Length: 429
View 1 (cartoon, rainbow, N blue to C red):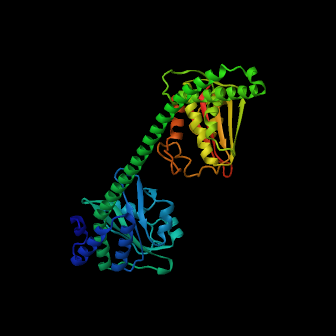
View 2 (spheres, one colour):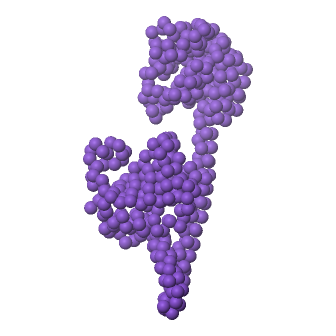
View 3 (spheres, rainbow, N blue to C red):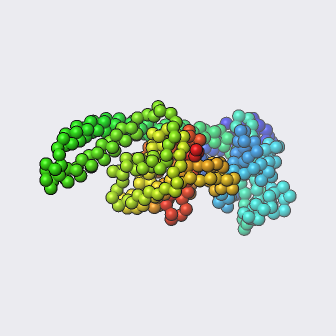
């Protein structure tokens, strides 16, 4: 129903209650902001000669802003560009918020209250703003108007009454739509979280199974190596060389299995002096079996920086960066893993958001993949954010957390056509 304050605005005017009830029912049937926008636009066209409308909202928690929720006609493109504007941008809305009364501007070209820059940009002529009320207070405005060749169209008393009643009905409808959308958003977020939790449970289960398999494999390899080691190569003649090669391969496999078991354990050793060059070499031995044959890994080192860190966590961070690069390049490509030491001054940190001056050990992982979209690069370290169909959205979040725990940070860059480059910065000793 129309609030008492709205009836005050229409006192002395003829109100079509049947029309009000009909409009109220149509607005209440809208379940989304888009449906509500289309409904209000249709109703405005039905009760007036105006063919363009907009909805402004004064958020109580942000008193210095005006949010344009929706618009049709020439205003629509402007709203897409700047849906939120500072108070004072649209003087007519400020006047409505201050007085609580409809604001009518017959011709915005000559009216001193209008924003002349906006008038020139949109070709505004007649502008009518009526209050949108909720709980007896003004929360926004319903605006209508004409543009360019439509000329000046001053509202009749009947049109103004209908527009005021629509504004009064719009407040509760907007509140209801926002509540429904919030509920749907929470439902979708909860469903997404549940899917991620299920995925994490699968990952945890696979990790436990892998650790168990690696442990058993290591024990079997130990027996195999010990048994074959009793055979003297010279007793096999020319085949002795084959035995030596087999023992070397088994020793290498055993080292990988031991590293895999070590990587799967939660670290409790605390920080110690760690060579980043050694950590990279160890990690690459572990991940190499999972790298496609068509992907070339190039390792380089410029110095041997030493950091205070938990080795297992550093291995985990490097592993995540390399596997992330593997997923980016696919079956064919190149991954460069470089270790270096950098001195960042106040000027250098400007190119690396989140960094700070100091001496750093750096592990850089650069891939030849498609790169990262500009609108995603600020989200990739967010927990549970992923662009991979089977991804958990935890890999890069874990890398970032490990870096922060050690007093470091992660920098990322992705110039168009040049793949992605991640740099793990850790304080150097």
